[in-house]
Length: 222
Image (cartoon, rainbow, N blue to C red):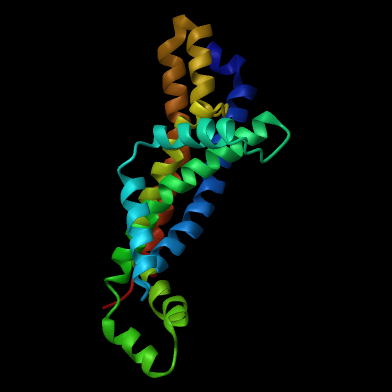
């Protein structure tokens, strides 16, 4: 317990980094995942094939490899610099990796939500002269989002926990600080572990309760 009290400010800063990673990556994943969903149901076969290939590869690749690719492959070998500050640059490289990985799961969740929308609604929209994009944006996709609130919540909670792997690109989030504290306070390993575990529970539990409430609130009556 002394270790947690002594390093309280550093722990808060580490969890703040975790929150920033989760929020920015979640926004990126929802945007890119929605785009992938549109591509997967697009009338053009090339778009469907591209999105299907991407989702299949991303979902079956370990997140550690994805982050290593963005950190070492894109960042080091290709020389992509998003900021002059190394810490900021590593942060954005981690966001790119987390977004690239999580968006594939968002896509599959939304695609399953589209399958719950009656086909007649899309046909009625087309009969009124609405094209594919307008039908998707105004008719089917809003209902798909409402149908998959709970799965999307689970994906975003998993994303929050997956931020711990950002250490492979040098982002000093909560898991990095926990490892450092375990090395420094070797006689208080259990207390350090329980403290960080409680921190993640405090992050993830309210999210689960919120998405559970949203699922009941936004449920589509059939």
